[in-house]
Figure 1 (tube, rainbow, N blue to C red):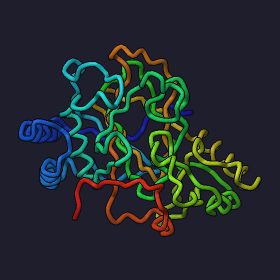
Figure 2 (figure 1 turned 120 degrees about the vertical axis):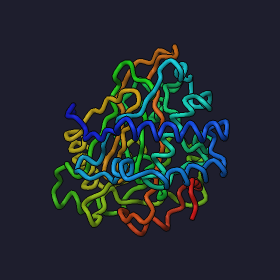
Figure 3 (figure 1 turned 30 degrees about the horizontal axis):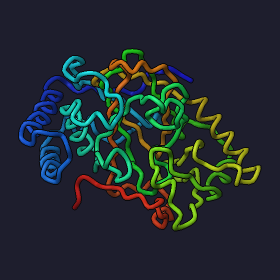
Length: 331
C-alpha cells in the first residue's frame, strides 16, 4: 500500500468562513441539524447561492486517483465534545460540521440517505462501537475494513462518498484504490464484465439481509463507461463460491491489483475525503479503540450526481433488497 499524497483542494479563509457562517445561520434558525423538509429547502437555497470559488473546489473528481481531499474547514476539538460511543448517541454532536458537509454535498449533487441505515439521517457518524470490533462495517476497529464500493448491493448507491474528519489522534488511515490505476488483461475484464454473482447487503442493513421477495440479482463487477472503466466491488458480501473458477481467478487478480494501487489517506480534523464511488473502493486499516471519548470520529455523506451516466442500464431493474433511498432535494 502506498502512502503517496492524495490530490488536495484547499479552501481559502474567506470561502471557508462563508461556508461556516452559512451553516451556523441555518443552525441558529432551525435549532438543530436534523434534516427536516424546511431545513433541507434552506440548505438547497444556500448551496445555490455560493460563488464560483467554492463551486470550483467542489468540481467533479478529475484525476485517475478518483478522489481528493478538501482542506480548510475548521473543527474545534474541545467544542465538539467526546467521540460518541455509537452513531445512535451522536445526534446533534458536531452539528455545525454536519451542516457544512450537507452544504458541500448539495453543491456537488444531491445528498442521499437510507431508510434502513442510521435512522434515515443524511449525515452519518462513523465511530468505533463496543461489541462490533470485527464486523465489516464502519463501526468496526480491530479488523481490516475490506476495500469496497459504498452500498454496492444497491442500484441507487451514491456516486460520491464524503468522509469528514472530526477527530483522528492516532492517524488511522482510510484506504483507497482506483480502478483507473489497475492493470488487467482483456480476458479478465471480459469475465468480470458479466453478471455472474450478486452482491448481498452488508451488516449495516439488517432488514435488507432478510429480504426474500425476489432472488438476489447477479451484477457485473466491471463496466465500461464513456470516460473509462468503473467498478462495483464488495468481496466481503459477494458469494464467490457460486461463480466458476475462471471468474473467481479473475476476481482474485482484480483484488490483487486494487491492493497494489491502494493508497492510505490519514485525515486530520477539518479535512474531507471525497471519493468517486464508481472508480474507487475504500476501506480502513485496523486499530485498537479506547472507548474513552478520544477515538477516531468521521462524518459521512453520500451524494448522487443528477444525470450521471456511469453504470449499466440494467441496474434500473434491480430490487435493491427492499431498501429505499431518500434524496434531500427533489425536483
